[in-house]
Image (cartoon, rainbow over all chains, first blue to last red; front, top):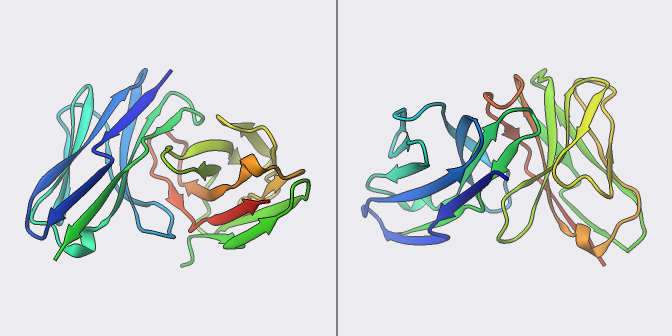
Length: 110
Length: 114
């Protein structure tokens, strides 16, 4: 059975304090790993897709990396507006085989 | 461009009542899907469709029905609501067949069953 585990469950940072969120996965035949941002009362918003180990993607203060066992979402010099829940999704095989992590709730204090 | 639109935003049902959660997308996406989000758990796939007239079950399909008569619409029906169906429901669409295409989500329907 595919499993996706995100850590930590919650993270509080001071503005400007860089850190990383982790997504650890055991998935048969990973086809893609997706990162999403979710604000309270909203649907998840797509950030990145990673397809193979060694791949990296960047967007503003965020950088996503992928290994054969895990993905990291690095946040450099975060701002309060980066506060949100970050979700990891692993996709394998058919259209049915989608496994979400339970998310990391990030709070950035001014 | 509206993207994925879900209605209603909030709904309260009594046990045994039925209702339909609406989902519409204006991006001409073939793939559409429904998820439920419960505290402490990841989103779980309920049903999905890879095109008009084609639907299939996801991880947690029991108690839910779907149909896909047009590319744009993918309603989710609860035939006899139960308290265990209290959750936040999200609809999503994708331009291509997962697993390689990002999902675009609506803003959800918060359902409470008493």
